[in-house]
Length: 103
Image (tube, rainbow, N blue to C red):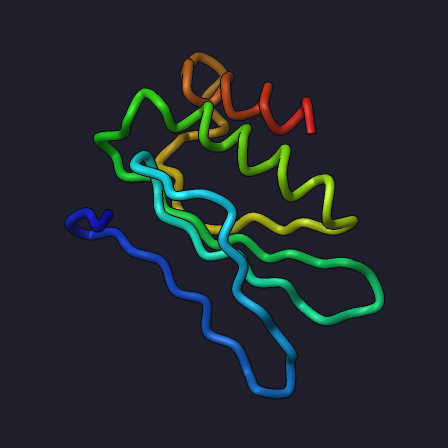
């Protein structure tokens, strides 16, 4: 699903051996998951969560993390979640931090 102003891309140099992986189809966000060939199992996830988000986002995010944490010893998640994680009063920030702490 594409949102106005959203979208994800992960450019990489051909020196790096990458493989795109798909974990689930989400209506709450967009993501690209790239397995990087390295000495440890490494996954780079580039994600976008629109400002007008689905209530399913946090369930989807936890589902993604539960899948990738099993297969990879190193996971980097980057992108735009439209969550002000530094705002301790924000309920979305609290929920995000709780999920990340669990994994």
